[in-house]
Length: 207
Image (cartoon, rainbow, N blue to C red; front, side):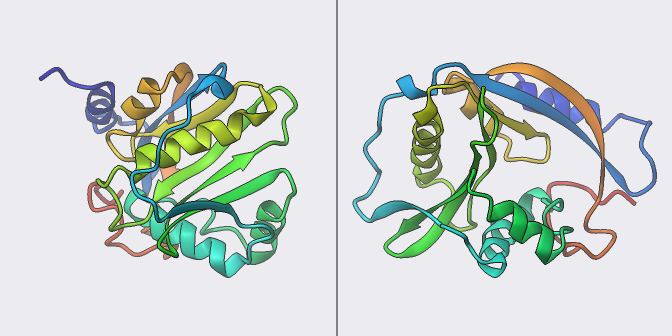
């Protein structure tokens, strides 16, 4: 089986020698979908799914979503934010926090930012642990694209080598095209107490 772009980049990142202490080698891809509004609607994999906007979500509820979904993928950026800064960010009218529920239980979420006039951006997209591999992510991505396409401008997102190994290929299959990419040195949030040391088991600690 041919090596995927993600797998090749993951191996390259492990060979980098330009990192400051306690930083992870990360490669990030920036993707663009020109006409998201043309994506056809998909039937949900079950009748008990609902995607609802969390209008003015509390910081505690957002942290539950972000921390739970992001722990496997070493999401540390918004963990480091103060409650005041995070409340301002998620309380912005242009930021839509969309939560998918299955039989009343939250199973995933995505953030969409409508603040830029010429594009819309999916900032975060993830299922919660225990709900991967059930066809839910594919459906939620379809709905995120359709929701993001309502202004009829290009839809942007990014992914990196810390994300799920199939994320990049899934985005490309939906028509997203890589328009930029770069290497990063990412401070390991497991080494400063931001998140548990056992998080992101597929990513070695930057010790």
